Image 1 (cartoon, rainbow, N blue to C red):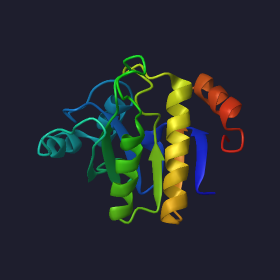
Image 2 (spheres, helix red, strand yellow):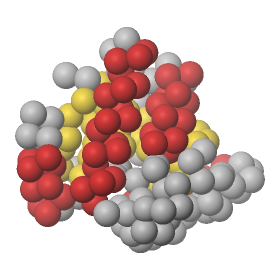
Image 3 (tube, one colour):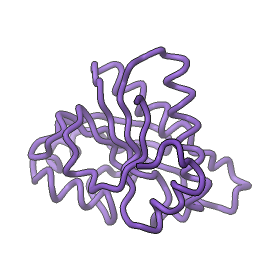
Length: 168
């Protein structure tokens, strides 16, 4: 199954690449970003210092270091501004997917981008994630296995309500 939604700690997943919901500095932060930096080790921070940050919607790739994943794809999601400021968020997923494809990744794990401290409504963020990933898979014809790794029962309940066919 090319797309699934699971409850998991993204730092523990054995996939080719995980996506980091990063801030624009790429130097670590809170939430999933901080967890990935802690789990990957200090070498990740050193590599991120060489990347010159990342713009909103963009994506950059690093090694996975101490993670089971070979790569980390860092993307900066939009901050929620009420929905009237172009905060669609699709480009975060599209650019991450392209980068994974360009690096021959066959398996990829996403967190829910911008749904934490950036304030994006969780249900909207989940719909954007699923729709963008499904569109990519249809266009590319690629057999990439992709999971959206959610943290917590409340998020999985949301997934079961909105995408019961994908939620495990």
